[in-house]
Length: 351
Ligand SMILES: Nc1ncnc2c1ncn2[C@@H]1O[C@H](COP(=O)(O)OP(=O)(O)OP(=O)(O)O)[C@@H](O)[C@H]1O
Image 1 (cartoon, rainbow, N blue to C red):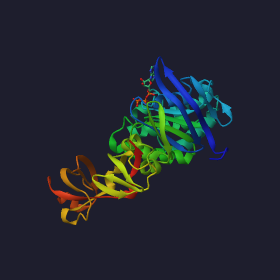
Image 2: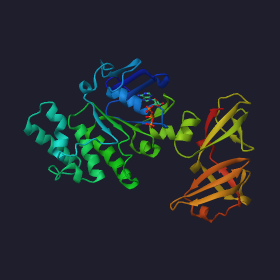
Image 3: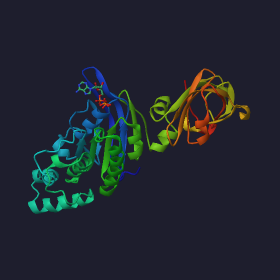
Image 4: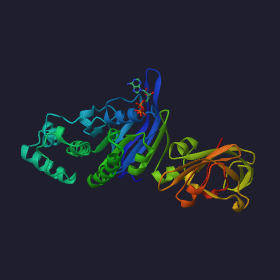
């Protein structure tokens, strides 16, 4: 990333709350105009990091650089970032237009300029005719869009969102993810969103930041995090990965499920390793067509409509397998199958 593209540098930030280490040396470089998702299990420090960026918490050590300015000690209102939280916090007694114009009014923007900006934003969020409606009369999705418009009315340098979609039902949430991404691209605003929903993070992010215990475990585009997870925690957290123990059996080979696989591996012969493999990277064959691949037993089958999810027991390991192959749904419990593993799609970590 060039110096001009670097928008926010979270520079070795640590935070402790009375003995609880919420963040340890978090270092992230956020590119201008990008959509960054902070993802991780409950208590990993996502909200603390977002609150530090917003200015609601101070850092214990490290600093925040916005372009060339150290904003670590700047109060939240001076940072002027746009924010949307789960509660949305729209003013229920005000109209849509009054809600959107709120930040502009506080900044002394003239009434006519406020009206123009509100009209412009209502067009962008594709709700041009609701300016005079009370927010209490809007649907969940409409409120969401109004909250986004309100946050972006002041043209903030950063747009911060904390689980903004988690109160919505599943279908509306899916739609809003697409809308949120499209709106962010229209505005071109650097955006940081906190979520514990890996699907949501994969849908939205240019850059996915996976956190655990106050530390960043991996920061990369979603496809990289999915295909090349930095360790077994990331592999497991992001989608249904099977983590199986194995050993480096010879140079360029690992012993996995009692078979040898050719894999590029740097660790010395004899090293115990963990191998992560995605459910969709395992194929099943009839037992008599296994061609030297491991044989397993079908323990669980669930037809999910477009795909089938199975659990196959192989050498004391239980592997989750997912396939859109229609014949998978014809398999029966306790049936023996050949288990074909795509060795190019394996991720390997020292145990
Ligand atoms: N004000 C506070 N005082 C004391 N401890 C806090 C405070 N805020 C956060 N913590 C602790 O810091 C850790 C990180 O919390 P944080 O809310 O940032 O996690 P999170 O990843 O956002 O979790 P969740 O997804 O559950 O919201 C937790 O152990 C939490 O209990």
